Image (tube, rainbow, N blue to C red; front, side, top):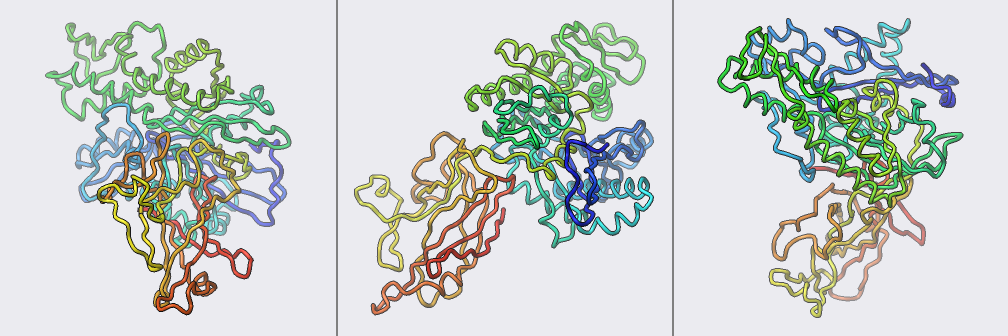
Length: 591
């Protein structure tokens, strides 16, 4: 159904945009065929191979054989025949693999043992295989649904944009690997890597909530709200200020986006540990049977459990009765208190995260929008509503299936550009050299040796130079720059240049990035990316500093300009030639 609140597409040619929300537990995909003069229409992929009933989501699960070849994907992995074949041939089930991409700085609420990967199969290979499967299903849907579907795909898939969603905590390194997976999957070719765009799941979700109309009363100019996306693996929380509602929605972040490893899989993980202990020594005390029991828990007891339930039942396979274990005709009885214990840690993390978001947003917001699979749990929802009442905060879920919230919201993000500014999640800056100051105790620390540069002066390296402070507002369209200089000899005509961008995630950054005499980063610092550029033209435009001296050198003055307002970091260099600013290209590389 087309959204009549959105203006007709003003482009001169048809375009295809695909959004893929790869979650820890489930994946959803939407697309939009942009037709000149027509209001954009968002469509979900609702037909997946082996799916019992049409659904907008499929499990983010794959099976690999012993040689490392993918054998089953998505809904196929829940098909009884596929499961039997997998057991017969020794295939490996791969799930929760998205969490293996997580950045090292993300705190985890408890020890989580992720299922092992098949031999010789990497996380990057799994991501590519999964995206290739998604691409094939989008192609099949378009070619079978539209009368000229084959022509549409053949013509437009070569230039289509692919929007991938990421948790708030995923950064450049994770995005780089996801882009490469999209290229490997054939969604875009190598030259089309820039047509892979990234949006955070929280941002996509708030745009979906606005599009759905179910929170329309909350969309008031100058109002504030907080979006909490409780997904399979992560919980993303971001505060927003509403700058305009009509003619188009315009938002800005009012508190830094945060990401917590506290999603629905942690409820499952706690339940599995409990079941393994309860069923120890019984006929169900083996991994394959336990896995099926956990599967039943995920799709029944976990979804239905509500506050006030005093007892729940989990289906075991078979019909045995073991009274002392609470097993009657193959059903395990567990208490409401035991069920609550499974939800305890994620619930606490969500509440703590919301309180931090309110504090950092100046407590301007008084509304929370909940989306995501874990938010659909009656128990979690009722607990968060009660928590909200205690603090005078309204808590709401958008109507309709929130499983497609992020995929559709990602399309809205690409088309509308609704978010104009964001809040810096960390301090961002660079490591530079500064003139040695013998009166500065830190410059004289043991192991911190001054180095004589080409100009004959002593310098101290590894000094912190901030560009953006944590919690600063970052305009989407604005560049943030820092002046630099490099001293070069006449023989150094080939002038590649690189600088590492660092993030400091704690309160106030120290004066130095590294410990004295060591290459170890001070705790709190992370290398985000490396900006690489060629300064040849800048070198040619610069005069010698001391043309008549025995030692000739050039002092190159230039700026490193960073774009930090989008989900991805962009970079370029600039310098002056004859009093005019000249821009040179730069590339951003990740380890």
